[in-house]
Image 1: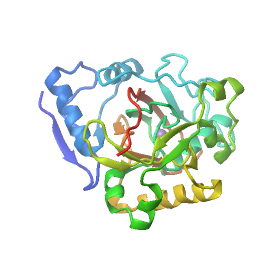
Image 2: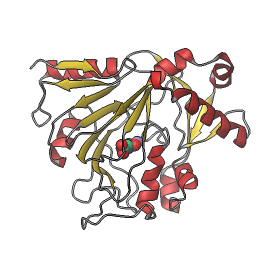
Image 3: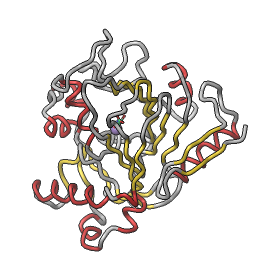
Length: 290
Ligand code: OGA
Ligand code: MN
């Protein structure tokens, strides 16, 4: 099978055709997908009407699918436990309001982040399947954090070099006012420290590593200054020359690298249904400082 890979933006993001995600990949095809991913950071697979089971099976060919730890808000599918529900429709097919706890928590994704960075070995990548897509907004935006690191002004560079930031799952609820994690969830997810400047295990390239919805501290800095630094870094990163903005079509599947990109979704009309299913590839190694 030969893949047709077409860049969608000079910084990152490429469309991949010539692959049926429902079929197992042979070794050469799998390597071609990984090579395209290493090069483009975000892959768009258009017209892939996969079931949840096929979504998980495809993910398994790339790594182990994560099972979301938190069960209290209904964000994890009851039917297929590896599926994380990025949806404003509940299991009875009713539209939820933005005030509902699960929707508040999902609203954190409007701020720049990388998935599962609060784990000791954060996720490698995520695969998001657009089932019911928004036409009023709901664009998923990605930033190439290699480029951001290369072009980071010296004053900011000096503040992050050789330092670590803390990532706390509970930070997200403090930020958006969603329910705080329970005692058991907190015990299972203690805050972790990761280098702010990291080396990618496959490409060997250096990137800035921040996740603004989870970062609540930076080594050697007072709390307010640390938060301001993370915001300043996010603001520098969020420039059009570093960013691919994905406007969804039904049954697009997006696969992004959580080790060298951040992402954020734009808001949309909350009376419009938006149903996306995600798998997340478990990280196998700690974040290595560059
Ligand atoms: C995610 C996420 C983006 C979106 O699934 O990890 O941040 O487009 N969602 O909903
Ligand atoms: Mn996310």
